[in-house]
Amino acid sequence: MAPDGRLLPLESSEHPAGSQSLSDSSIQASGLHEEPERALTKRVLSMAHLQVFIASPTHQQLVGFVEALDAAVVGIPLTATDLHMSPLVNGLLDLLSKVEQTIERFPAAENGGSRFGNPAFRELYDALQENITKYLLELPDIMRANSTARAELAAYLSESWGNRTRIDYGSGHELNFMCFLLSLQLLGLLTVQDHPALVLRVFWRYLNIMRTLQSTYWLEPAGSHGVWGLDDYHSLPFLFGAAQLIGHKHIKPKSIHSADIVNEYSKDYIYLSCIKFINSVKTAGLRWHSPMLDDISGVKTWEKVNSGMIKMFKAEVLAKLPVAQHIMFGTLLPFPQTTLSDAGNTVHEEGVSRDAHGHIHVRGQGIEECCGIPVPSAFAAAKEVSARTPLFASGAVKRIPFD
Picture 1 (tube, rainbow, N blue to C red):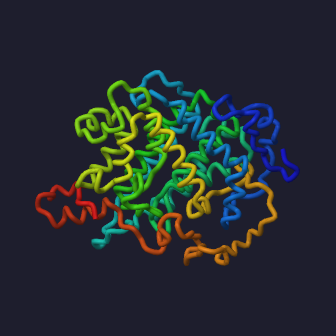
Picture 2: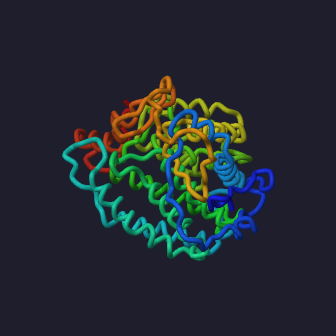
């Protein structure tokens, strides 16, 4: 334990990512039953703070955890039946089932023809906030963690569903879910044996819940790269999905252009499921609506696709200030001690601005107006097209021309 009472992060040199459980004596002796000390805070307030974060043990742990999960699912389909299912993994699935049941209680509201976020999402969000701690306390062995750690777990989980004010969702929210899972491992409640199931059962369920939220409430893509991004909302499904396909005898990166292969194997592989999902709401072919995915399909092997996805995660999620500014730090995932001010005078840095929401934007790092100019949901656009076109009178989400 550090002098200020924080749980010390494990040194990567002593605990290589994925090499063992993080539940050793250094965690067990860190005072899991002490009283709360402080809440999670956002500490990445400037480009200088971002560089401190990138050089920190917490950054190493996040990257190491994602890489360990990635390595754990190489060559394993979603339909695998021999996964190790610990009590906590099953508890996490039960928790996600409760989230699904909560969603069912809040149907989308009549939105007056708007193509932007549905206001019923705010009611759902509030209901989830009211119940997240209750759901969390029902997890096996969760009381081994002290009240501070439990509060931090609840905060990461609460921020995994999107933003209440803007009714949007992006890779930062997805990262919060990873922080939640990593925190459980740092507490010794999850081990490396759980990694395959964390991706192929827990994260897969989370992804499907998010697809439901995106399609039901028309969540706007937060800071979307638009046509040049992998996906309007997610990045990690492509990373884990590419790992699953490493070594596959028949499915190659270029196979995403085969409708038969995508339809046949989307139930087995996350990557193909993502391609099927994207094609379900956009038309004109991947070359036009998803040129980055089209370019990636020209790579020869899934190993290279996967390594590229890991590099993209580091560069486009963890190393971009508009995303990293939302990362929350506490005792489990601490921000390093630094002499940098937390006042956040980032507007004085060249190329850096702060919008009306207090969010930081950096010229050249994504869409500067991501918070100021809402990006309509593709689902909302599809609904609008179906309302205008008799061919789509069924009201289901249909393919739409990319614009």
